[in-house]
Length: 504
Image (cartoon, rainbow, N blue to C red; front, side, top):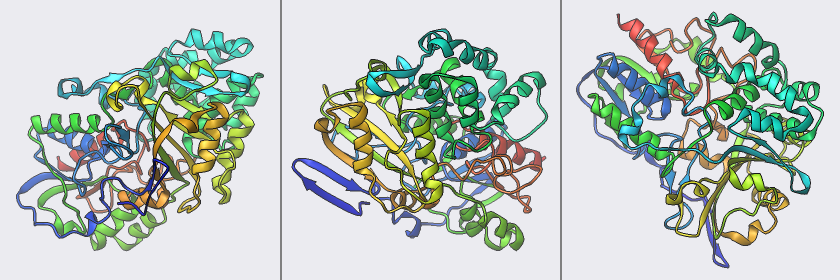
């Protein structure tokens, strides 16, 4: 549903959700019947992962989704012009093939094809230069010149044992299975990215590359643990790559749903859940929802004190996103950016620091840090022949009403002169649009809540098992539980394991 829709000089400038989902939570829906071992509310990557885990354990499972299609943030839409396929939220899947749970799924048999760009990540700098995270660690080190040796010392121990590392960090806090590996990761990862970049690297390329990775944390880069995010994403770039899903991120959700159904799982879409009384008879309820929605839907079935803790859960900065239909590929000055699936647009380490600090001061950066994806360079199905798509967002304060279009496109023009001349149409998604489309995105926060040193492992509340609640029947499986945001399914997997222990 759009809150603005204008047409000027052949351009479409629109806002809001392209599929008209805003009214779905208030629609009148029929009562569901039947008896299940578990009902999952929400069909994002974690809801579907929880359902698959439970069905593979022999349980009868139903997934209920409010929207007409499954997927949550894994959806793809034609929101600019016909034939241009845009990823509504998640686009580049840095954890998609690194996730231990996803590695266990035969999704290729159900239509999912991962496409790997020639370069996972590029970060343009001035004068047509760029920092580049190649799939090859060695090639990356060569490109970083004098900082290459320090970059190798930092990352090689983790790249060589990436699967062991991912199994440890993509889950709740627990004793390490590989203590020396985790001790080494913690030695660097508990630092701030700002401090680590300045301590290890002398040149602007390596510093900027680490800063861009850390900016995915949506935290100021002087905060502890931002280095851990940078390390984790750098490791996946070299060990597993940052792929896209051919045909759009919706294909991931569709493949997961098809696999779930093949195992006997059931899915109902277009069915909003307002209270737990809307659910059929079941032994367990797993909620792929934000803590505030868990409190609202569970109501008196949770103690009042626990509900208050859920409602105090902290959400962070929002996303302001643009999708473009383009007449040609983005004309980056730096050649490596033309081979990259993801481009981090901001400039130097100092510029990234300034951009990511601004939303935490309630401000919009004049030169925002952009996460840019150019899927159509590697997946011709995303756009008509000869045309291309562009996808970009920046971080803004929660519930921000400021229009960032000019600033985002100004940053693009800065590193890709002539970019504006390629725009055939654009679609704008503001923080309010994100929340209207998906009430889990509170204030436009698409990451499921702040992931700082306190809330990373205590999300959504401090408990021995963060997926459980005082009501043994109710569990939480959303990105507001460890390990947090990303298309990896691990929140759902761990929540399902907790549910199975309770069912014994």
